[in-house]
Image 1 (cartoon, helix red, strand yellow):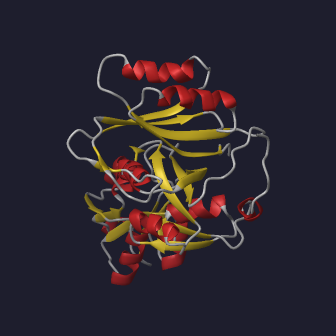
Image 2: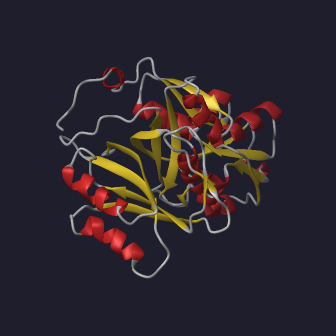
Image 3: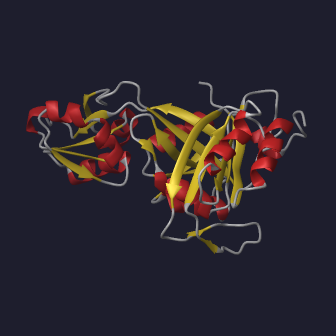
Length: 305
């Protein structure tokens, strides 16, 4: 397939000039930093919920949505996997962002007088030991890291600190009392960029393809599914299973209706392959023969940074 014809999206993509990118959280959130890393000159659009970011793209209010899918310490963000299935957006890129948590408080507040830390639950979990060592016993979970910084600044709290980015400190006028407070220095979150239309896959640079499928119940079914890739020497970089025994899932299809379907398990798999590669096409053709459901979520350039 080669590089394929240029599209207007290709011309806009490198810096994201003119692109509007929706993210969940307040200005200064890590998702906003991921959007800026992907598209340096884009205009970011803060959204209250992840669902809102999807809706913003579907309603053409934004061109892209940025979505955290996994963290090297906290693992997968399952809510977002479910949203990928419920909506009909395509993954068009990935961004790996090193997360550096800081302890932020109002001007003049000393670490000794802090009793509570406020942040997103994952951020609090990632700094658990450090916070305890600093004598901060109480934890308060909120929807996003930058939102915690904003709240502390607005309420002028004197005994509570936020766990958030240094950018959030700058935006909300807070002091940074400690930097890099995560318990593990290697803390990376992988974000996905989503768009209404897929990009044209290529073979001249490393691509990944994300798929989701379900199988009949029974021994050997998953083994058979994985063999589809192993026999073609396609490497898998991630595999995630989600049980859905009890609750039916709304699965968007091409005809805009949203049928309810029951799946025992859904398997999310990332392949080190481009959909422009006939080998990958054959593998998915083979999987389709016995999978009860299969959807390609996107084929996109690998973030090598």
